[in-house]
Image: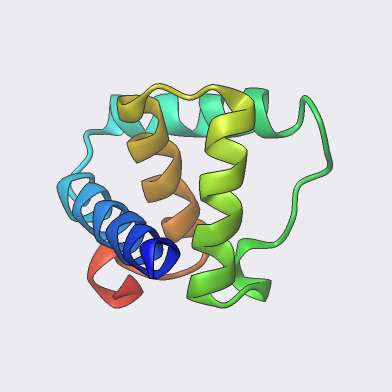
Length: 94
């Protein structure tokens, strides 16, 4: 029961963060790309974000968030950037 609550809470946090990151400036998008390239490619190849379901992608993003030690604002930027790569707006990830 606690695990289900935790999963639901994490899903809500991801949605809120994605909504807040929807309108990023050009400099924020550049920073998001820099973070994505530097943090993600440090340990593995780039994966095709659109090849994953929303749930799977967000699960992986949460796992990698912890491993890459992204700060909350950095995570928001990278999440927004990968949603753009997936061809989705933040609203479509719900």
